[in-house]
View (cartoon, rainbow, N blue to C red):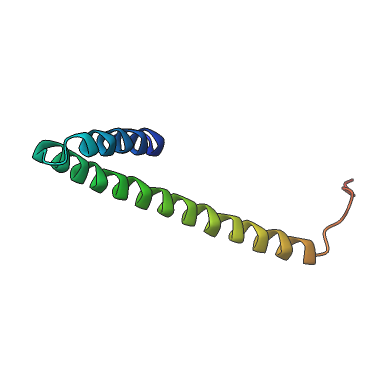
Length: 78
């Protein structure tokens, strides 16, 4: 599976070819298959972005929690 950009570029090329040969079943089938590949790739990107958003929110909450605690600013060891 290629990158999102590669898949999109390939689909655009196929669409241009389909305009030149509108009755080509092979091009239609290939384009349809690539549409599924594009959907799958885009869906995976959404999952990754959502996971990052969740992690960022958790980090922000933890940072706020730690800032509320009274931590000594220097070590007062022996």
